[in-house]
Length: 356
Image (cartoon, rainbow, N blue to C red):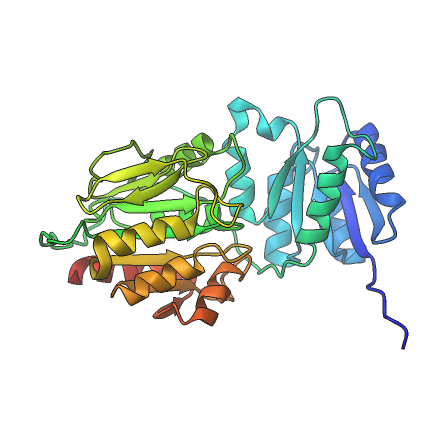
């Protein structure tokens, strides 16, 4: 019996530079597993190509005439959703670094830097881009209608102060990966400014992007979003991220700690599993664990440990996840008490804080 071969991944590339279009075209054109079906010179042309050709994936620049990359992504994700990778130099410059998260929140799956010296067909950067295309082309994306992030107005909702707990500190822990920045933005921008619990977050993000992510979330949330300091006591209404290449934990005294223990499963540092396990031991039933969209299974076993300690455990549902990987693995393990759409998670957190 002959083995059936998979059809090639059909892609469209968009860039206003003829040179970049040629270089990207050279990278993709001679690969048997990728079929380059269109080359667009601006955002409007890219939109027409996607709607007519229905490719499996789009690689687009950020700065383009007529319709830039952000506008293109917003329009496509509302009308013709598909996996999108942004390949750009300017979006990664320090003065524009928050554009990365605007693009991700709009629906892009990843932002890939153009090497300053340009691509070479067999360079490590070109091979990494090919691997990214092959991986992301399999992602099932969801239609989304763009909402401009903005700091929410003062809330009238009053949440009673929580009682002191003997066993550690009451806390909410969140883990996310691919698609996480947009999901975190929606949750944090919905919570009231007087939210009476600290929130600990591990988000898988490329090296060098953490400061930008924290600033972006802080600017678009009523809560304070910061990078944790080793040994500090978490404050209510504050969101903490670990420093780059550090795990984040909570000890029995209710203090945060940062660790450079080896990556969990040889991959993740920070690790969602590491955070969830630490919170399970320190806070137990006085905690909530939330596992959001992401590829892989980091966080699934830690969420099970949280559940077994008496904590409330939540997974984002499949329909609202960019990638239903990490939540799915937690559901398979029986680690999830509540599976919720993204729009319901902030309300669930408020109810938990009221009743802790």
